[in-house]
Image (cartoon, rainbow, N blue to C red; front, side, top):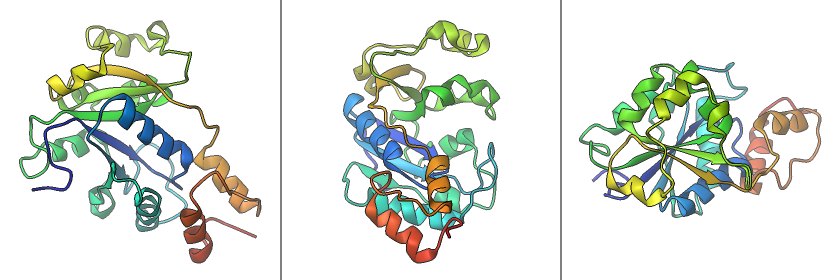
Length: 224
């Protein structure tokens, strides 16, 4: 049976993770609790399609994610995008997960997104296909719910009948719903972490100690 196989909703958390930090970890943790996910599968991008090339190798980013998630039984790591010799796009990744030897067609998959990423979906590769492959769960700041009226018109129309207020509904079908959840805001970004590292400033308490140790040991990111 594939790793993490089962019937309950599986969170899918993709990203560059350059490097992984506590903002990523907190989103995955709170999504697991708020949405009753049976697991959260982290999928580091091998060759990100919508941003500049990462500062470190895909293998190094994968190693950092493994270090950061190792002590949480809810989390699992999928290395397939790192080992694939092609750009990483979300729809093909989800199509791979729907194969019979992976999650199959019936298990609920829940793609985890921040509010900014969700609003930018119309710029994604084959974005309309996402809804046939997974539910979408959008994190927002506590007290500041997602404003549907501010979404791009094409996205708002596509999602008009897909929003649901009860996360329990995610377990009743494999894909197609949109749900939001509040996430504790941590003002941490990978860009800021890289800037601090490059200037020789402390990044303690912004990312796990074991990730910091890996960065120092392998001399990742330009450091004085």
